[in-house]
Image (cartoon, rainbow, N blue to C red; front, top):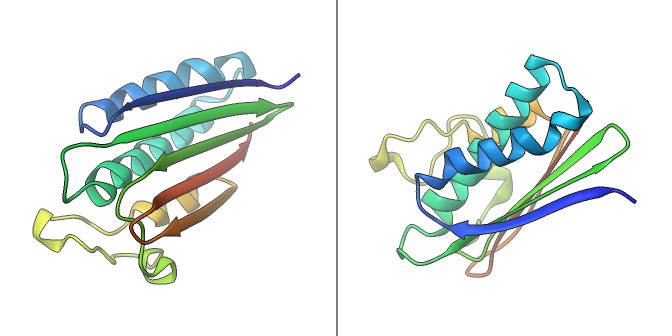
Length: 138
């Protein structure tokens, strides 16, 4: 049986660090390299931050769901929100694109996720939310 974890937390900026800690602790059994651990934590941080800032920009209510599962040496991570969704995923994936320039956002979130993980899938529907699923072989 594969090992898994699922946790929901309020879409508050301070919970981004909680998601990093949970992820780091959960993948420890794989004895990842320091680089793999940092890469995974950074990708999770970007995904959770995107959910908080972009998914729920018009409301203070909302939850982020973090799922992590391990199958052999492969780590799967899913970050889900039920927020605003992404209108144009291809545009959102472009480096330096940001829908929130007034917040001094760099527009590198998806680029960072894609550079640190082996695979990144984005499933989003406007007004229904976004699920980012990332995988990495450790």
